[in-house]
Length: 122
Image 1: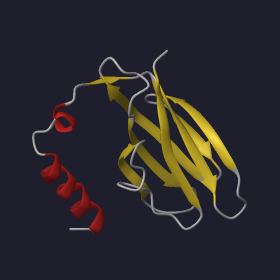
Image 2 (image 1 turned 30 degrees about the horizontal axis):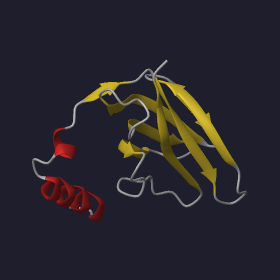
Image 3 (image 1 turned 45 degrees about the horizontal axis):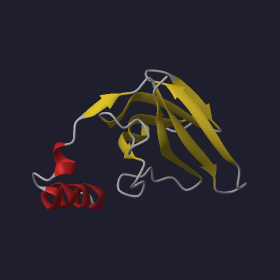
Image 4 (image 1 turned 90 degrees about the vertical axis):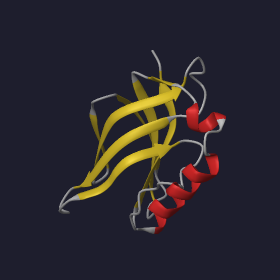
């Protein structure tokens, strides 16, 4: 088990049956992500529709879904992402990123960072 998976499992156990673990969510039409090129310092906000793909530098980002707490569109966003890199075999990141805890399930890349800012509901 990776360190990331162990941390996620520990959080699930810690949350148990608390309100956060049982919170109902709604699907959004899209999401706003933020990309950082660590070498150049360039920061870009990326607006995406669910099911679409966007390019950030050498990364290809697919947003599968963005979810937010029911009745609170400005609440904590959870985005399902798949990220690949041009010229690199396989997937760089695949899973859920959480806006309020970007380090919990972060993309590990030497040059780029991508994280979730919020869901788009309209």
